[in-house]
Length: 104
Image (tube, rainbow, N blue to C red):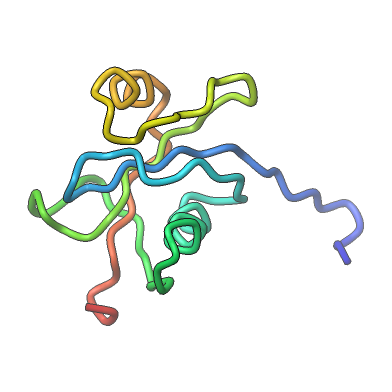
C-alpha cells in the first residue's frame, strides 16, 4: 500500500565494504541506509543499525561506501577483482554509512 501522491524512488546501489575494500552487494533500495541493510542480508549476515557519515573514522570501521549505479551497469562477477572495484568506484558516491555506535 502506498500513500496517494507519494512515490518511492528505488535506486540500484553497489556497496563496497569499508574494512576489506571489496564489492559487497548490488542491491535495489530506497535509501543508502536500506542499501546497507540489503547488503547485510545479501551476504547472509545479521542486519545492523547504520547511520550516514561523511567518511569512515578509521580504515577497519564497519560500514559501506554506497555507489549509485545505473540500471545498465554491468553486474560485478568478482567483488575482489581490482578492475571491477575501480569501475564501481568510478560511479557517483551516494554516501557512506557506518554501523551505529549503539550496535557495536
